[in-house]
Length: 414
Figure 1 (cartoon, helix red, strand yellow):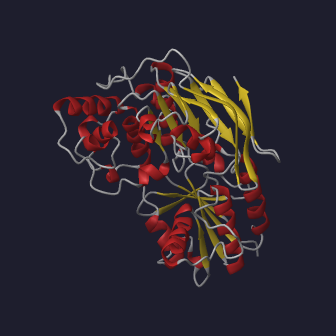
Figure 2 (cartoon, rainbow, N blue to C red; figure 1 turned 120 degrees about the vertical axis):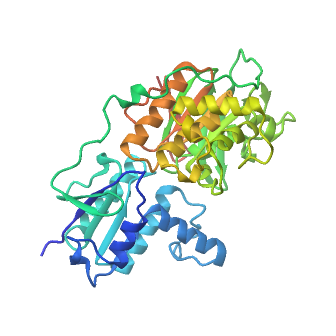
Figure 3 (cartoon, rainbow, N blue to C red; figure 1 turned 30 degrees about the vertical axis):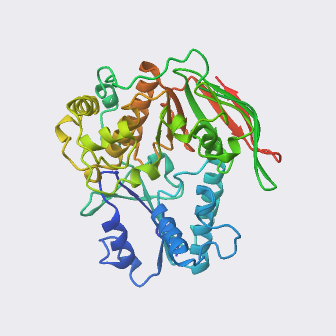
């Protein structure tokens, strides 16, 4: 008999741990009793993190036992491929796919989709998803997770928000930072014919890229195409920048500048940075910590700093929640706060690395709307990096890294 394959729709504001635990360990929800006495497996980012921690703490390679690389050194796509191969080797009766396509480029998405399709006749597939465009094409049974119970539904749910909701958010001007930056009348960042290799593996080949004041760039490229390497040249985190023709904020790379001379001009957010705030940080303190580039706030904030944080929270519609702890927010609101934290000092350059990863449709739309506002109404240059094409994003230019045997080359699209 053909397996029952299900899609379970959810939102970022609703925790998934209870749902996944019920499906794997019981008690099983109604309509899922067919999973009784069946062996399950979980395909998710959290599982990858668990195995990475196992490697780090105990030096035990499970997912990568047939690889020279560790999980830590792999790209997002390679890690997911390793986890999927391991799950198949365990021969489970059912697989829970928790947002399986996050952090994958189109090619990797298609490769994973092909493998999942091959399983549908023999293995029960339960897809948990927050982006409706990720729905597997062969699934015909739907449910909605509401945090306490699983509601069976007959069709794909509509977005709950008003389609024009984003127009009511982020009204007003951006608060002005008390920190003043040097006025630039030339490029903030300029790379000329930059090439990078690690050992005998070429990564970047003759990349030329200029980022000017107020530019709004989208950086695209397949998993492993060198996006992270390219960004590390700009942030000062890579020794590969030395000896290259690179200009960073008016200084030639290698002319005596420190990493902190570079970083003081940059605002930077990643999902991993969001995860590093695990303590009891209020929203007010979260934003003020962006002025001093610290994980948490360890000095008494000034009245001027409090006033600035209040203005940013007002712009986000969170002014009544200044004393709320950051970890109590939904993922979507956390990401909005992280964008504001990165912008509070009005940096010359804002780098947004996967800012919509792991977000549902509504939250991703709001983050993109905020980024568009930053791009059109501030003098901060923006570099937006994502494996997923966000249809509402409005960059003025695109740099696409295209892999070749000699390393990725850069195509500029406007």
